[in-house]
Structure formats: structure tokens, C-alpha cells
Amino acid sequence: MTGPETRRAELRKGWCPGALRPMETGDGLLVRIRPRGGRMSIVKLLTVTGIAARHGSGAIDLTSRANLQLRGLDTEMYPDALQDLRTANLVDDDVRSEAVRNIVVDPLAGLEPGRADVAAIAHELERRLTAEAQTFSLSDKFGISISGAGQSLGGAPADIQVFLWPDGDAVIAIDGNEGLEARVSAKTAADAVLALVRAFNDLSAGNPDVRRMRHLAADVHCALGAKAGIELSAGSPSHSAPATGRFGCLGPMHAPTAVVIGLPFGRISADDLAAIGAAALSVNVSEVRFSPMRALVFPATTAAAAQVLLSMAKALGLVTETSDPRWTMDVCPGANGCRNGTTDTRADANRLSESLKSTGERLPSIHISGCEKGCARRTPADWTFVARDGVYDLVRHGTVTAAPLMQNIAPSDMAHALTEAAR
Image (cartoon, rainbow, N blue to C red; front, side, top):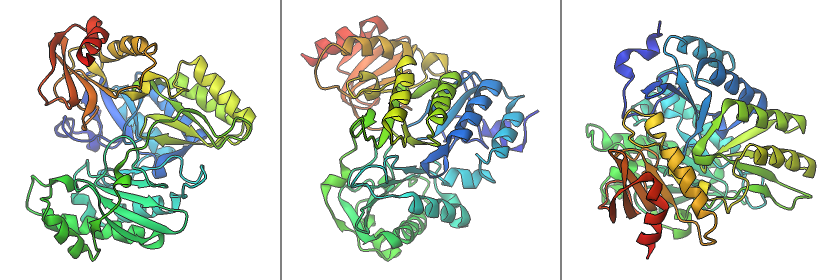
């Protein structure tokens, strides 16, 4: 039988699931794990793969918010899976704490030269967000990102963005008003973020249409800063430039700083993830970090460790090169994993990626959505395929809601349609 966290009224679409509040999908329950500080020990990673294999379908997703999703869990087996997660200290004490701990952390912070270590502020924000009752009224999708450099993290946009610098300064930027930011010291960055969260709660109280920073009217942003006691002003547009994907060995092979392994379309099997984890342990890499670019980041600092991890990743068919077109694609589960999907999006994405490998051109961003909801990507892509009744519409430089450039494209004709549309 299901536990109190899985009442039927809560098993619905339109919100962000967690481990304590799973979501029903086309292939069973989806359980989302939010790694603390954006990282996890390899031992715990292997625990996750075991739970996914025992209690679910064995399919694991890495989301654009750098969360892990275990798919295909049986409702009757969910309490056992939850208990295993509790034993490994991989879940929060309650649903509200889980929902508010929505922070994306720079996976390369402290690893690369010029990237500040953001671990301390990440843990401080998690602690304070889960300890302050006022934050529990935030939308499930209200998010914070923390970067150790001057670029936004890839993946889902954040309502509050934090940029830390090695010299001790920090920038707090507001999503929805490009260039609006505050400059503070790194020591007071957590205070500034919490003050902005409280101010947002006060300004949005009683208005169900204001659930994200971008929903605030432009003239309200001034009031936001004043209420938070923070001076917000126009800042550098460079902060809004998203980070690009980098895969494989970072730094020279003889002295690497990290190994980045991408998951094609954000999906990996429990067995393959366990194999990567075991390879990491075999070369004394004890931690993995999760990237919103749907990649695993291993702090591998020896040539031997880098070689072992890359060899395993290549053998498993994962992304190890930036020229691989699969990393530029945002792809939803499609008909095989969602009741709304009408196409096999991942098979279609694989076929399309094969055709793009030989182009030699700059890789475009591509969104393939199995229905008109567009769950895999909120922002515009260079090209967006939107499935309707088993065929696709094609949108250029837009989201799933934009007017299509072409319609009624058979899945087997997607590459041809791109070629024709680009002309």
C-alpha cells in the first residue's frame, strides 16, 4: 500500500515531483532525487542505481536542474524504495523542505582555474531555505543557481542567479529582468538571496499568477530591491550568457581537472551508471557532480583516472566530445514514458543526431517534444519539433507555442525537414 506522501490527490501532473511526492507517468511512478550541493558520493550513486534497478524500470534521467529521476517504479514497491533512500540519507525530512531545496550548483566550481568554490554558499542556502517557514510558500519551480564564474549555468533558468568570484565578490541577478543585479560580498551572498526570497513572497502574496520572478511587472523590480534592502541596478549583460557544453577531459590529458560525461538526451540505465560509478571507484574518484547540461562531472585529476572514465563512457555510448549533436538536444520521454506523448521522441532524436554528425556545421539547439506541453525545455531553441498525433510541426527560433514553419512531418523525415527549413 502507498504511504501518506503518495495519496492519489498528489499523483498528478503540472508540478515538480520529488522523492517524497512522486508523479504518475506513462511508465509508472517517477521519483526525483535532489542531490545536496549538486553532488553525491560514488557510494551513494551506486545505492541509487541499485534502488532504480530493484524497484523501477532501471531508467534514470538527469534533468536540466541537475536532479536524478528514477523511472518506472511500481506503486506497491514505492514505500520500500523510499525507505532505501531514507537509509542512504538521500531524501529530505518532509515534502516542503524537499520542494524548496531547488538549487542548481556549478559542477566545475573549485575545479577549474578562475572558478570559485561555491560549496559553502550552496550548503548554507539549502540549510536556511529548509529552516525558514516563509520559503515554503514558494512555487515548486522557483529556483536558484550558483555559478563560480561569470556565466549562467546551462539548463533551466533560475529566478535568482548567484555569481561568485575568486576575489570574494558576488553578483546576485534577477531572472526576468536582464541585467538587473546587485553586487555584494561572497560572505553576504546567502543573506542577499534570502532577503530577495522574502521580498518576492511579500510582493506576490495573494496573487496566484505571480509564481516566478519573471511574473513580476518590470516596475515592481525596484520595489523588490527596496523591500529586500538591496540596491538593484543594470549590470553586465555577460552574466546572462549561458555556459556552453564541454565534454571529455578538461585540461591537458596529463594533468586533467575533471572528466565530463554527457548522458544522451539526459537518460542512462541503472546498469550503465553503476558501471561508470564502479570505474570511478577503481581509480580513487570518490565523488560525482551533476551538471544542468545533463552530464556527470568527475573530479579526476590524474591521467590514469581520466583515461579509465573516458574509456568506459565511450564503451557505453555516452557523450565524450563536444561535437556530439546529442548534447544540444532537449528531448522529453515521449510516448514510451508519458501518456501525453504521441511519438517515440528518443528514437527520433537518435535518428536525427546520426544525420547531424556529418554536417560539420555549428550544432543547433534542438527541442523534440512528444506533445504540445514542451516539458523538456521552456526557452526557445533554434529548432523545435512539436508532436501532434504521431507527426511533428517544426518551429524556428521559438518554443512549442510558436507558429510552425512546417507541419505534418513524419518522424523519418525530420532530418530532411531541417535541411529544407534551413534553406
